[in-house]
Image: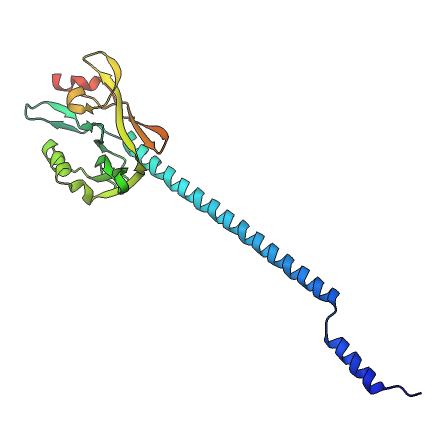
Length: 229
């Protein structure tokens, strides 16, 4: 009896060159596990990135409000005179805009005149936009001209809020005629001879209504005596 060594070696060669079913299954399981882990890692990375982006957006939103709050808080008694030679602090506060002089500007090192304005945004929405330009030695007519001619847009600006359905200002200050502190929709330095204590911004976005406040820190009820001295 003789052994066919040549045939046996050929069979051994083929068996070593191929893969068993068990090896194929193990390979599939390992590959599938790697795909699942890679997908999970990608999703986790995207979630972390989104969280960072959202925190960044919230940070800049808060920063904008902080900058504007500092500017409004530093509204100062920039006295101007009218045609009757009466002096009063410059402050123009209405339902859709307010203007004042601040000693805490956003982009310069000199006092600025500021406008916070309700503007038309896209899709019939509204935006709250902050503008400032150097005040130098402007009088009332100069300030009115800057507003009506749109010169205030030539300075620095920041969009505070956008895509709003409603936006209105209100003011809390002392009324010398009524001898009490009141909330009003229009507050001017010419009528009240003083700056308000608080500015409230009411706005609606979708079904949600919100309010935030700006406090004016440089104030005194004795300013009404300015023209009597």
